[in-house]
Length: 410
Image (cartoon, one colour):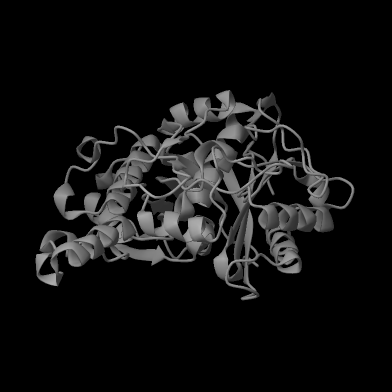
């Protein structure tokens, strides 16, 4: 639990690259409209797969955002990360020079690191032998480059750069790390989030598990048949409330608290009691009662096991008064390490813009899930407290609680 008397932590800038919108304003419009990012995969050859849809970002030009670093020496995920970090700083009304003398943290979560490049190296080895591996590509595959590239692109030297590899919950892990560092006074700001690029390795892994959807992702629907892999990045600017107020910054939302646990119950299957415990830890850390939560952004992968387990855990915590519970993966696909970071941004935008994004592609709710998933169309809502779930393989769970900042005292 956060130390009593710690600083309040607010979100003042977002960097967003997603298949339904780039930048916070376009992303918010995409969420409100219930856009779908689904299209046939082009990042790799899908010959031989009978399911080949995904949620890629079309038209990404890294040089529009990456100005200091040579983009040809960066993997696609690092390009996303650096671009999103620069966008978040700009969106916060700051410049890299404003941050240069401050103590900072850059924490980026990921599932795959630069696996898109690893795929290419392995293919070169198989086709022509190891001596034909491209040394430039080999030099950019380290996962640690996701956070280092973001810091280096902004010219930040007085920062700690962490890349967190807790799979699909990694974005929330990174945000929690930044929350602790800013709240305690260890740093003056934190740039936190997640990034991943579409890659053959992860698509194939989910395909072999039988969890790739045939056409679209239908979380909580009785006919759901799996995930669609996606890509993107979400980076959030965290700073102390007093700093944001002093410079007249726009405040999207406040981080109230978070919870983490790792049950190691199974490599891929979620554990009901552990997921419920993580949500309870987050609420306790935030000082929030279950009846105060207005919306849950679920992990909501669209697989049979995850959706039943997660919704059951939500009912265990919330009893008869379950908040509306949505899955953004119905629109974005599963963006892996970026998923919970993009969802945290979406929750904050929903608070600011007073709406609940929908769970699209929905027809009939599975009775075993038993939730209101806000099917197909967004609805107006005055949201004050929102919960953001991130659940990962290996039982790595992370839940963030966000609140509306209205100038009051907590």
